[in-house]
Amino acid sequence: MDVLERVTGAGLDLLDRVDRVLASGGAPATDPVWPLLRVVGALPGEALRFAVSLDAEPLHATSMELRARSREFAGHRAALDVHVATGTWEGAGADAFGAWWRALADYVGDGTSVDQASLAGRLLAMASYVDAVVEWIDYTRGDVAMTVADALRSHEAVALRTSTMDDDLSRAASTIGVRVLATFSDSLRNGRDLHDEWSQRLSGLPFHPPSESPPPPASGATRAHL
Image 1 (tube, rainbow, N blue to C red):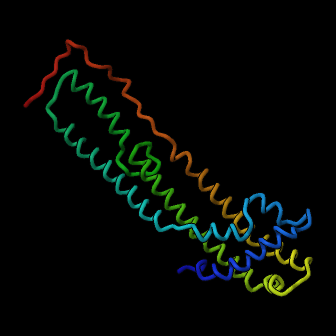
Image 2 (cartoon, helix red, strand yellow):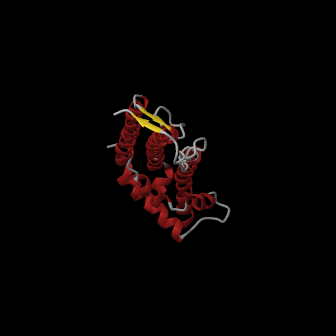
Image 3 (cartoon, rainbow, N blue to C red):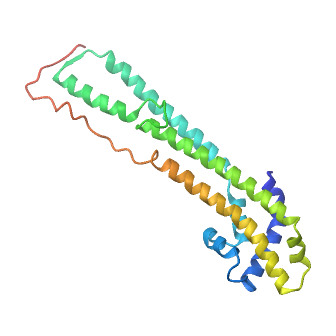
């Protein structure tokens, strides 16, 4: 159980109160809660439920699987490299095959770098991206937990439970709403930055056939030692 799970019960009770006050009584037109509501697209209680739903555990398994597949691709490529290098096929057909194999080998890659423009490299890049998303989830849950914990021990939390004055309730709901939604706004911005940072590395990877070696002519000689 992480910190967010420990404050979820009391936090939802408080933020649901905030949601009801904002939905029924609102806040002044110039209140800072409004631009944050537009950015986040959710009331504080709804945003907390979203944070609680974030689960990094399945992504850990996904990252491990992607790295295993990258090693598998690189292993198959290495085995075929050895086979091609030790082959006894000669002639125009062998040259054409060699050109195609070099193109395919480059396309498959050796899985040594996330920036390698290859299938194995793209799998490593995807795994690293998933790891970054896991880190984003962990930070988001931690930041939200601290914000909610601070809200629970605030004067505004007391006012929301005890005051019967509409103005007091509105101010308290707005103050807590701004704190919570500002945290989510920062998290969303970090998530967008993360996506933008990795989008180029995760772009499509078309295969380009070899251009330097046309198909062998029908009269080309080919020798294979069996």
